[in-house]
Image (cartoon, rainbow, N blue to C red; front, side):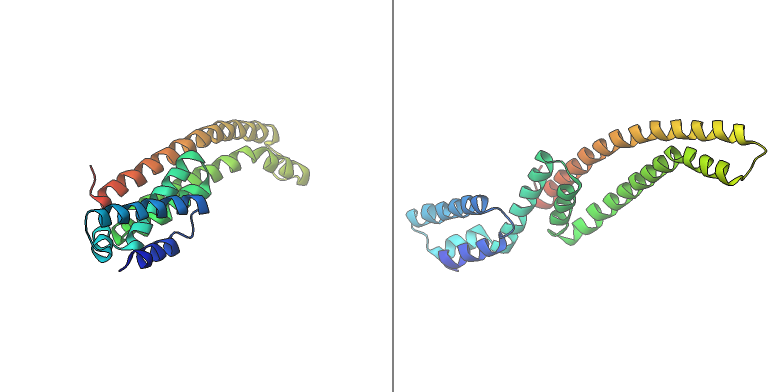
Length: 184
């Protein structure tokens, strides 16, 4: 593979990156070729030493997505980092997607529970308007206020738990990447 073919294939795989980031990466690889040519290597040898442009691009995209998730915390960014990590190997499909899906499921369950508890006074009010359970109306009112308070506390806990899970998921993705890349 020639220098032009290698860089063209790499550029094609890095289309998801912003232009300036893609150009910076391509410039770095042009420097690799320049250094290799200065050492007397042929272009195909240098390309072979560098590796497959598709694999290089996948690893670069994962690093980019993880960095983006660290700097701009959002559900979209962490999801893109997870998908990019999973794309590296089948190993990641099992060891990233499974635990992430379980943790996200528990988090969503806690969030729905918190919202339901916070809205319990609304249920009491509707039952009051339509005359359901007239016998213990005062008792049910205080129970709904109690559930609302528990729901508010749970909402605060879910918020901070979500921030903790985001950081934990990001650390897990980075740990998994080190394993896949063979780093310590």
